[in-house]
Image (cartoon, rainbow, N blue to C red; front, top):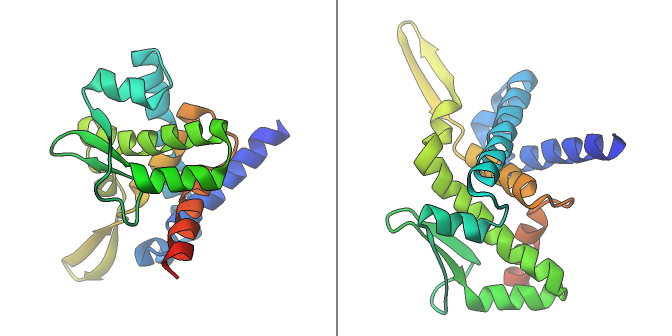
Length: 194
C-alpha cells in the first residue's frame, strides 16, 4: 500500500518535472495542472494495459513487431540521443554507439536490457499515439488570451512525454522511473562533450 502511494507520488513529481519548461502549464491553476498530469498518466497506463492484453506481451519489441513497426540498430546518427521514432516509415531506430556507451556506464546486463526495452517502449508509445490516440497535445488545450469575442488557445505540447513515461513504467513494470535513463543519457553526452 505504502509502496503504491510512493510510486504514485513519484510519478506525479516526475510528470511535473517533464512539464516544468512549459510556460502555459506553469500558468495554470494547481487544480488544472494536477488534472492534466493525472489524465496524461492515465492515458499511458491504459495504453500499456491495452497493448499487453491485445498482443499478449509486455515486451515493446514484440508489440512493435506485431504492429508492423520496424525496430533496428544503426551506426549512423544519434549524436545527442539513443533512439528515435520515424512516423513516416513507422520505424524505431536505436543508435548503437550511444546505446553501447550508455550500457557500459550502466554496467548491469539486466539494467541494460531494461534500458533497451525502455528506449523501444517510449518510441513505441509515440507510434501508438499517432495510430490510436491522435495528437495528445490537442486534448490539453487552454485559453491564454481573451478579449471580447476573440480568444487564443494553446496546447501543452510535451504532455505526450508524460503519457509515454507512464506507458513505459506500466508496460515494463519497473519500480524506478524511466527518467533515470534520460538523466544517464544527459550525463553521458555532456560529460563526453567537455
